[in-house]
Length: 206
Image (cartoon, rainbow, N blue to C red; front, side, top):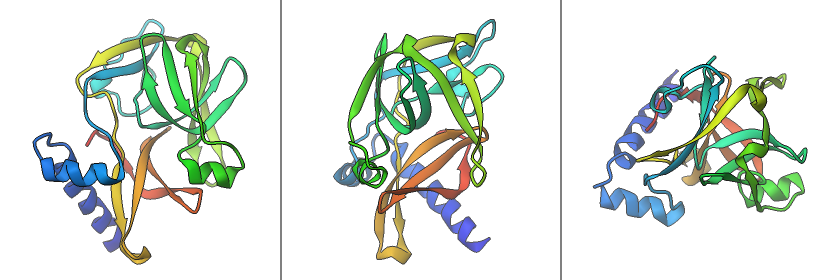
């Protein structure tokens, strides 16, 4: 419980640093390791046909659908049959989406694949999966034929990662991306190419 409380406290402090656009020193330190700004851009609202989904209130999977945000990780399958289990969404345009092959270059080496970006027409997204049980690998599957895919311009489009310092690893700083599961957003981090979850869930925006 003490470790969990410390991590949650660290998250709260980090929220304060990186949610304030006028915190220049905090932003500068952040950009030394990862360059992500809360700027205007697009999100992709995946809205159940006949339903209404508000992107600002949607931070989990619901009956109404879900939202795809840049810099977060999603499990998506496309019309060509290619599935990205841990791809980071790098760009969303009015008619296309760009996703990485996996979270980073170390993960790609570990998985035996090339780290590269793929751009698809938004209409080519066919299936989204959301993990239910990490240990057993159970997933909830959503077929996009049941949803409207709506590109929406917003003031803060990216879901920027957290930088967390692991004191037991010689203060190693990890880039932790958000990953949408059936229960909400988790944080994923990489160790020697292997992806792992933090011990708590994130249910709201930083």
